[in-house]
Length: 178
Picture 1 (spheres, rainbow, N blue to C red):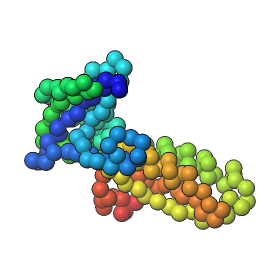
Picture 2 (picture 1 turned 90 degrees about the horizontal axis):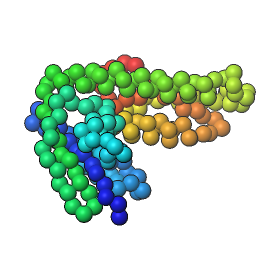
Picture 3 (picture 1 turned 180 degrees about the vertical axis):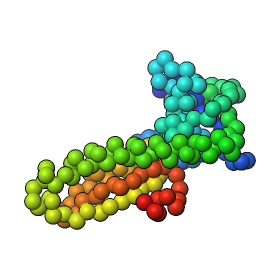
Picture 4 (picture 1 turned 90 degrees about the vertical axis):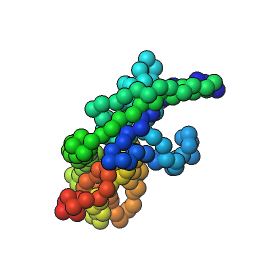
């Protein structure tokens, strides 16, 4: 068994601690479990850099101030532990940032989808398909990407899926208006 280095964060906002739920994929460690955000260090990466990278990957945001608490180590793993308090203003700024970046990621995905479903590139039978337009929201960016990828794999002779918008977080009024 190889030795693994990881970094995790205890992120507090409004007397609540952020946890994320791992994807329910049997091949990953501890699937479908709740955990603190963080992950493994890549080759040559410091714990704080790994944590910031993982936070952006998992929750699309890294707090401005992150403090080192310490580390726990056993025979197979070393975990560097950090904490951050995110006040109301920073939380609102982070939410606005996520709302701005999530649709941009989806627009890139939409561009690829439109190229694949462009009627000029399809046979006449493909152009007559029913299009199912979807707006999706997930709890993490990784889940959004995975769901978009899986939806694009669904092919049917009579129907096609068009992703109009995707994002991370709860469904809100802006989604309903879209």
